[in-house]
Length: 202
Ligand SMILES: [Zn+2]
Image (cartoon, rainbow, N blue to C red):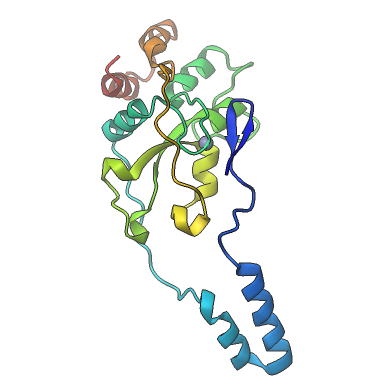
Protein backbone atom coordinates (compact mmCIF):
# COMPACT_ATOMS: atom_id res chain seq x y z
CA UNK A 1 0.00 0.00 0.00
CA UNK A 2 1.30 3.43 -0.93
CA UNK A 3 0.20 6.82 0.20
CA UNK A 4 -0.14 9.66 -2.28
CA UNK A 5 1.59 12.83 -1.26
CA UNK A 6 1.42 15.25 -4.13
CA UNK A 7 3.55 13.95 -6.94
CA UNK A 8 5.47 11.56 -4.76
CA UNK A 9 4.38 8.19 -3.51
CA UNK A 10 5.49 7.70 0.06
CA UNK A 11 6.47 4.18 0.90
CA UNK A 12 4.80 2.74 3.96
CA UNK A 13 6.78 3.66 7.02
CA UNK A 14 6.61 0.25 8.62
CA UNK A 15 5.67 -2.50 6.23
CA UNK A 16 4.31 -5.33 8.37
CA UNK A 17 6.48 -8.05 6.93
CA UNK A 18 8.66 -9.06 9.83
CA UNK A 19 8.28 -9.77 13.50
CA UNK A 20 11.75 -8.63 14.48
CA UNK A 21 10.63 -6.73 17.58
CA UNK A 22 8.70 -9.75 18.81
CA UNK A 23 11.63 -12.12 18.38
CA UNK A 24 14.15 -9.69 19.79
CA UNK A 25 12.03 -9.02 22.85
CA UNK A 26 11.59 -12.76 23.35
CA UNK A 27 15.34 -13.31 23.10
CA UNK A 28 16.14 -10.59 25.61
CA UNK A 29 13.52 -11.85 28.03
CA UNK A 30 14.86 -15.39 27.63
CA UNK A 31 18.43 -14.27 28.35
CA UNK A 32 17.33 -12.41 31.45
CA UNK A 33 15.10 -15.10 32.84
CA UNK A 34 16.64 -18.35 31.66
CA UNK A 35 20.19 -17.62 30.54
CA UNK A 36 22.23 -17.23 27.40
CA UNK A 37 21.38 -20.63 25.88
CA UNK A 38 17.66 -19.86 26.03
CA UNK A 39 18.26 -16.51 24.41
CA UNK A 40 20.06 -18.20 21.52
CA UNK A 41 17.12 -20.54 21.00
CA UNK A 42 14.66 -17.66 21.03
CA UNK A 43 16.74 -15.84 18.44
CA UNK A 44 16.97 -18.87 16.16
CA UNK A 45 13.96 -17.98 13.94
CA UNK A 46 15.64 -14.76 12.83
CA UNK A 47 19.25 -15.98 13.01
CA UNK A 48 21.48 -14.24 10.46
CA UNK A 49 24.90 -15.88 10.42
CA UNK A 50 27.67 -13.45 9.47
CA UNK A 51 28.54 -13.78 5.81
CA UNK A 52 30.74 -12.16 3.25
CA UNK A 53 28.63 -10.57 0.56
CA UNK A 54 29.95 -9.76 -2.87
CA UNK A 55 30.79 -6.18 -3.56
CA UNK A 56 28.40 -4.19 -5.68
CA UNK A 57 30.06 -3.69 -9.05
CA UNK A 58 29.92 -0.28 -10.66
CA UNK A 59 27.22 0.18 -13.26
CA UNK A 60 28.67 1.06 -16.67
CA UNK A 61 27.64 4.50 -17.84
CA UNK A 62 25.96 3.10 -20.96
CA UNK A 63 23.89 0.74 -18.82
CA UNK A 64 22.86 3.55 -16.48
CA UNK A 65 21.79 5.74 -19.39
CA UNK A 66 19.81 2.86 -20.92
CA UNK A 67 17.99 2.11 -17.65
CA UNK A 68 17.22 5.80 -16.98
CA UNK A 69 15.81 6.24 -20.49
CA UNK A 70 13.75 3.05 -20.27
CA UNK A 71 12.24 4.27 -16.97
CA UNK A 72 11.65 7.80 -18.29
CA UNK A 73 14.00 9.16 -15.63
CA UNK A 74 11.47 8.39 -12.91
CA UNK A 75 12.15 6.65 -9.63
CA UNK A 76 10.57 3.20 -9.77
CA UNK A 77 10.04 3.21 -6.01
CA UNK A 78 8.49 6.64 -5.33
CA UNK A 79 7.74 8.04 -8.82
CA UNK A 80 9.87 11.14 -8.34
CA UNK A 81 11.04 12.77 -11.54
CA UNK A 82 14.83 12.68 -11.60
CA UNK A 83 17.46 14.72 -13.44
CA UNK A 84 20.86 13.21 -14.18
CA UNK A 85 23.52 14.56 -11.87
CA UNK A 86 25.84 15.92 -14.61
CA UNK A 87 23.03 18.18 -15.84
CA UNK A 88 22.54 19.63 -12.36
CA UNK A 89 26.33 19.98 -12.05
CA UNK A 90 26.25 22.29 -15.07
CA UNK A 91 23.57 24.39 -13.43
CA UNK A 92 25.79 24.56 -10.37
CA UNK A 93 28.66 25.78 -12.50
CA UNK A 94 26.51 28.59 -13.89
CA UNK A 95 24.89 29.55 -10.61
CA UNK A 96 27.22 28.64 -7.76
CA UNK A 97 25.50 30.99 -5.33
CA UNK A 98 21.94 29.85 -5.95
CA UNK A 99 22.46 26.26 -7.08
CA UNK A 100 25.71 25.15 -5.47
CA UNK A 101 27.14 21.82 -6.58
CA UNK A 102 29.96 19.87 -5.00
CA UNK A 103 31.31 16.73 -6.70
CA UNK A 104 31.16 14.81 -3.42
CA UNK A 105 27.81 16.33 -2.48
CA UNK A 106 29.36 18.02 0.51
CA UNK A 107 26.70 19.27 2.90
CA UNK A 108 26.00 22.99 2.82
CA UNK A 109 27.48 23.47 -0.64
CA UNK A 110 25.24 21.09 -2.56
CA UNK A 111 21.74 22.08 -3.61
CA UNK A 112 19.11 19.75 -2.08
CA UNK A 113 17.77 19.04 -5.57
CA UNK A 114 21.02 17.24 -6.38
CA UNK A 115 20.58 14.90 -3.45
CA UNK A 116 16.86 14.31 -3.83
CA UNK A 117 16.56 14.25 -7.62
CA UNK A 118 19.69 12.51 -8.85
CA UNK A 119 18.93 9.12 -10.39
CA UNK A 120 20.99 6.06 -9.67
CA UNK A 121 20.69 2.52 -10.94
CA UNK A 122 19.35 0.25 -8.27
CA UNK A 123 19.82 -3.49 -8.26
CA UNK A 124 16.36 -4.58 -7.14
CA UNK A 125 17.76 -7.78 -5.80
CA UNK A 126 21.45 -7.27 -5.13
CA UNK A 127 23.84 -9.89 -6.47
CA UNK A 128 24.81 -10.49 -2.87
CA UNK A 129 21.37 -12.04 -2.39
CA UNK A 130 21.21 -14.00 -5.59
CA UNK A 131 20.10 -11.26 -7.99
CA UNK A 132 21.86 -10.71 -11.27
CA UNK A 133 24.15 -7.69 -11.08
CA UNK A 134 23.84 -7.03 -14.80
CA UNK A 135 20.45 -8.15 -16.08
CA UNK A 136 18.35 -5.19 -17.16
CA UNK A 137 15.24 -6.71 -15.58
CA UNK A 138 16.99 -6.53 -12.21
CA UNK A 139 17.95 -2.88 -12.70
CA UNK A 140 15.66 0.06 -12.05
CA UNK A 141 15.99 3.81 -11.85
CA UNK A 142 15.88 5.01 -8.25
CA UNK A 143 16.18 8.46 -6.78
CA UNK A 144 19.08 8.86 -4.41
CA UNK A 145 16.93 8.90 -1.24
CA UNK A 146 15.16 5.65 -2.18
CA UNK A 147 18.42 4.01 -3.15
CA UNK A 148 20.12 5.15 0.03
CA UNK A 149 17.34 3.88 2.26
CA UNK A 150 17.23 0.59 0.39
CA UNK A 151 20.96 0.07 1.01
CA UNK A 152 22.07 -3.35 -0.17
CA UNK A 153 18.97 -5.19 0.93
CA UNK A 154 16.57 -7.06 -1.32
CA UNK A 155 12.97 -5.94 -1.69
CA UNK A 156 11.89 -8.98 0.26
CA UNK A 157 14.28 -8.23 3.12
CA UNK A 158 12.98 -4.67 3.25
CA UNK A 159 9.34 -5.63 2.94
CA UNK A 160 9.02 -3.25 0.01
CA UNK A 161 6.43 -3.87 -2.70
CA UNK A 162 7.56 -4.57 -6.25
CA UNK A 163 8.75 -1.53 -8.19
CA UNK A 164 6.21 0.74 -9.83
CA UNK A 165 5.47 0.17 -13.49
CA UNK A 166 7.42 2.24 -15.98
CA UNK A 167 5.44 5.48 -16.02
CA UNK A 168 3.53 6.66 -19.05
CA UNK A 169 5.25 10.01 -19.38
CA UNK A 170 7.46 11.89 -21.80
CA UNK A 171 9.75 13.13 -19.01
CA UNK A 172 13.30 12.93 -20.32
CA UNK A 173 15.21 14.06 -17.25
CA UNK A 174 15.89 17.31 -19.18
CA UNK A 175 18.38 15.41 -21.32
CA UNK A 176 16.87 17.13 -24.37
CA UNK A 177 18.35 20.38 -23.07
CA UNK A 178 21.63 18.87 -21.89
CA UNK A 179 23.83 19.64 -24.91
CA UNK A 180 22.64 23.25 -25.14
CA UNK A 181 23.18 23.75 -21.42
CA UNK A 182 26.66 22.30 -21.66
CA UNK A 183 27.44 24.73 -24.49
CA UNK A 184 25.96 27.63 -22.49
CA UNK A 185 28.19 26.70 -19.55
CA UNK A 186 31.26 26.89 -21.79
CA UNK A 187 31.66 23.19 -22.53
CA UNK A 188 33.46 22.23 -19.30
CA UNK A 189 34.83 18.78 -18.48
CA UNK A 190 34.33 17.68 -22.04
CA UNK A 191 35.21 14.00 -21.66
CA UNK A 192 32.71 13.23 -18.93
CA UNK A 193 29.88 15.21 -20.45
CA UNK A 194 30.47 13.89 -23.96
CA UNK A 195 30.27 10.33 -22.65
CA UNK A 196 26.91 11.08 -21.00
CA UNK A 197 25.62 12.99 -24.00
CA UNK A 198 26.56 10.09 -26.24
CA UNK A 199 25.00 7.53 -23.91
CA UNK A 200 21.76 9.51 -23.77
CA UNK A 201 21.86 9.97 -27.54
CA UNK A 202 21.33 13.71 -27.31
ZN1 LIG B 1 12.47 7.45 -5.04
